[in-house]
Each structure stands twice: as C-alpha cells, then as structure tokens.
Length: 460
Image (tube, rainbow, N blue to C red; front, side):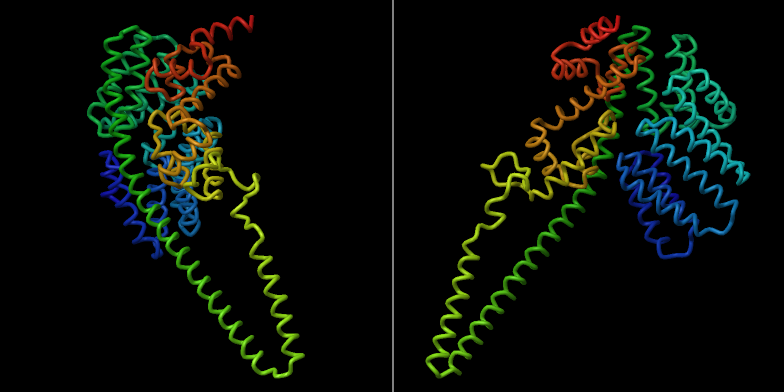
C-alpha cells in the first residue's frame, strides 16, 4: 500500500492500482478488517479519479462491510469519517453540492468523535465544503471555509491540498472581480503546482489561471497556460487510457472465453439431440421387427407417418431468429449483418441512457475508452452503437450532450446568462471557446452570443 500511495502521488495510475489490487489479494482472506477498509477506500478513490464510478461504488460498499467488523469504536469513527469524505467526493463529481456538504459535515463529526488529531483531514473537509459553497454561488461562506483550511495548512510544507485551497480562494476573488487579490493567491497556487507531481492539481490551477487571464484580457498568458493545461490533460488521458485499455483487454478475454464456452455448449446440445434421435430410430425399428402381424405393423406405420408429418410441420414453421418481430430488435440497418446480438445492443443503449442522465460528459478528459469502460464494453461495440443508433460519431455525440446541458442551464438557471462564453465553454467541458462555439452553432444553428442576446430579449 505504501508503494501504491507513492505511485499515486507521482501520477502513475496504472501501477498504483496494480499494487493496491495486490494488497487486496493479501488482505481479502485475512481477518485484518482495518487493512481491508484502508485498501478498499484507496481503490475506491482511485477508480473515482478515473471516472469508473461503478467500480468505485463497489469498493465503498466493501469498505463499509469491513468497517462493520471492527470492534474499536474510535477506529470505527475515524474510518467512517474517511468513508463519508469519499462519498462526498462522489457527489461533487456529479455536481450534487448540497448532498456533498451533508456528507462532509457527517465526516467531520466522525473525526471529532474519534478525537482525530490529524488536522490534514479536517483541512480536507474544509476545502471540500468551501468548493461546494463556491459552486453554489455562496462566495462569503466559501471564503470563511477556505480561510479556516488555510490557517491549518500554512504551517505545513507545501502540498496538493494547500494548492487547492489557495486556488479556491483565487476563484472566489475572480468571481467577485477582485483581481489584485486573485493574482496574489493564484501566484502561490501556481508555485505549489509547479513543484507538485499531482497532475489533477495542475489541471485545476491551470483552469483557474485561464479564467483569470481571460478576465484580465492577458491573451499571451492565457495562451501559455492553455498550452500547459493541454499538455497536462494529455498526460492524464494517456495514463488513464493505459489503465482502461488494460481493463478492456481483460474484459475482451472474458468475452471471448464466454463465447467459446457458448459454442462448446451448443455443440454439446446438438450432439445430445442427434444421439437421442438415433436412439429413438433404433427403438422404433426394433419395435417394428417385433410385431409380425400386418394389422399392428400398419398401425405402427400410420403412427410413425403421423409423427413424421407433425415433425415436418414444426420444422417448416418460421424460426423467431429468421423473422424477428420489429419490436424485438433494435437493429437500424437490416441490410448489414449485426455486429452483436440485439440483447447486447439494448444493454449498451440502456447504459448510454444512464450516462446521458449524468454530467460525466462535461469532463474535459472524456474519451471513447472512458465511456466504453463506463458501459462495460469495448470501443468497437460502443462506436457501432453510437454511429448506428445515435446517428453521429463519438465527438459529435458528446458535444451535443454538452450543448444541450448548457442550453438547459441557460434556460433554468439565470446566473448562467451572466457567464462569459469562455466560462460556459469550460462548464460544458470544452477545451476552448472556439470549439464550444462551433459545436453550439452546429446544434442551434446560431452563435452562443446571438443565442444569449435572443434569450435576454425574450425575457424583457
């Protein structure tokens, strides 16, 4: 676990999880329930960072079970505090900030009950709660919480959490147009980021820097930061994809093994049916030879002919797979042989429907491998389903979801109408304003600025 933690801090996602999984293999059959909870909690956070929320949730549940087997109440309270904190991260990922705040308060309550002296954990809760209030537009409350975290962290050596706190304070000052103060805190955050190996910290601070330089109209610095951010996102995506591709390989191996087993099973069933048929024929012939009377022979012959006729009629009936009813298939292009079964297509469409109800598509690092992992399939199958049923390629599919997300926000939450177009682009998950504008016009047939103008005019 020490190796896994160090690898995680250096951004080696794949190796970090591999070591943690080895630790899981060691503790899973032991009675070391505390270590089980620690390992499961670590794996939950790593899978969450990758956006693999189903796997992350499974490890949260495992951690809860392990904690339930502990007998030291102080340890139980401490571990429950960490678990509530992890659950809060989940809610923040899905932008459920009020629910996250409730979980953070529960987390801190457990830490207090445990008499936990690790102030870093309290500072983490303060930073998370400050982030939630900032996202909810309560800048005053966010500032109070960030300041409390800052008081705890300032005496400590520079670390990723201190960077996030300074970054959060800078965001508040940018939002309130106090650019002098914003510059002061952002500079410290950038200095911490440059010395850190945490790629996600760099990404967060580069995002804030972009916003600051846009607001202050420093295009040169904005371009420099954008270049750094793009480079960081490429590194994150490369490390994430490396791990997810490994997961795909394992998934495809399992699929191929299942397919082979299914083929073997079919051959086995056909063989049994053929053998059964031969036995029946043999018995019928034997019975026929035993009856010497013409009357009985004729009766038997009539009976055999009747059965044979019934069998032929049954064989001539159209098979369900030969003429599928329209309601039992979702194949769009009937002229092409299906790449997968109708059941698999339905399953993937259901997964995509679930995905569309989240806001995961607003993540800047969303990719086809990521979505394939979310849908528990491979990229080939997923591309097929998106192309044939959504009638667009992956990029246009994601962009349309993002634009519809922003359109809904503009229509239902008035504060979004005050955002600059660059901020709307960032909120939707676009890496640049120009890409956002292009996608926006493709969906609405007008530019973002024209849409905002029309929307404001209609509300007068």
